[in-house]
Amino acid sequence: MITLVNTTATEELGKIIGRAAEPSDNLVLTGDLGAGKTTLTKGIARGLGIEQMIKSPTYTIIREYQQGRLPLYHMDVYRIEAGAGDLGLDDYFEGDGLSVIEWGQQLGEYLPEDYLELLISKDEQDENLRQIELLAHGEQAQRFQTRIMKAWEA
Image (cartoon, rainbow, N blue to C red; front, side, top):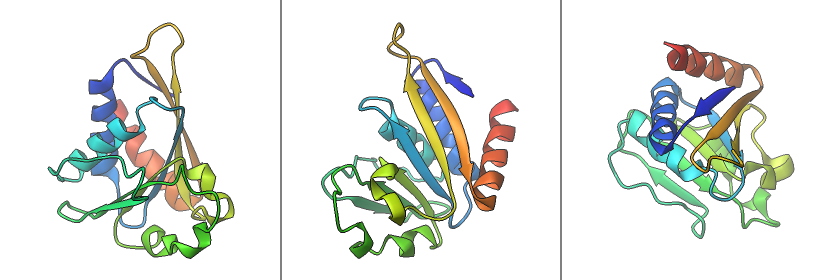
């Protein structure tokens, strides 16, 4: 469990994740509206060396950022109700970059086979406080989680 005290800490965790990412890593961000999923993704982009402004892909579904150490595929699948199988997401999940998927549980059976899920919980008393739980689904995700935790604890 990781505790984040403010948005700066959220972005710092994101930077660590970006630096720890390897090709074909998949990250699913799970949390309520306003939990900090896009803030975390901004930090991930910085950790990958991407300086471009990161915007939520709410209406475009996928935004690609190619100018970092690895490509970043930022997805927001909140609005997908059907047809996820027609989006060709496997090309991203198995590709040469890091896929960050907001609201990934919406994909159901179309989730990647191997992914690291970050469960982001807001604190009821402190609006800035977040609790992050990392759940690895697969061997590659387990290695990704280990790299993140080692860097976070350092």
